[in-house]
Image 1 (cartoon, rainbow, N blue to C red):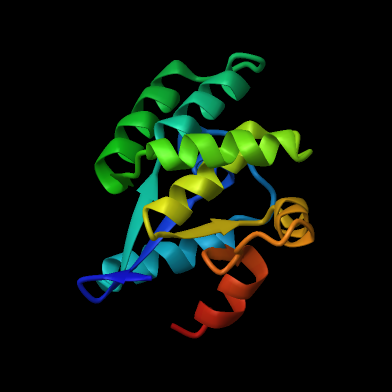
Image 2: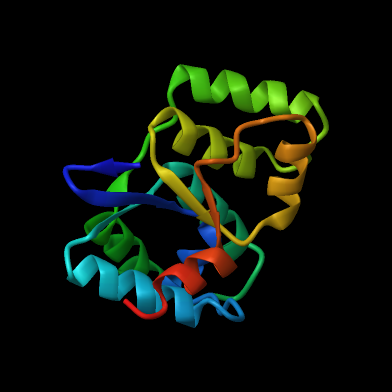
Length: 154
């Protein structure tokens, strides 16, 4: 899944949280690789407003540094292109939710990447296992471990 020679990757919210000051164990290696690939011009990184909503929800339940959050949100908007869920993505996510997966935001991120032809980088093995168990296409998903193995020498 590339666009004008660049790999396009939608990031799971996990990878955006450190930008607003929320520590997430083990994401440093992925972030270094993503930054290196972006700086070399071989990858285009995406976020969604859904992730911003999820970030704000998480921050609302914790103590947070307002300035750090503001700087982080501005940085996300500047550094990452925005992928928007299509009507097909919204409807597919609803269908998948009905089939038993609890996290609607994760389903929307998956279906947004699928309908926008963008790879989805996640560490959510439970999501992948669920999708595979019901025969869904997971070819647009790259698990964190695979991503690190594939790109650690780049």
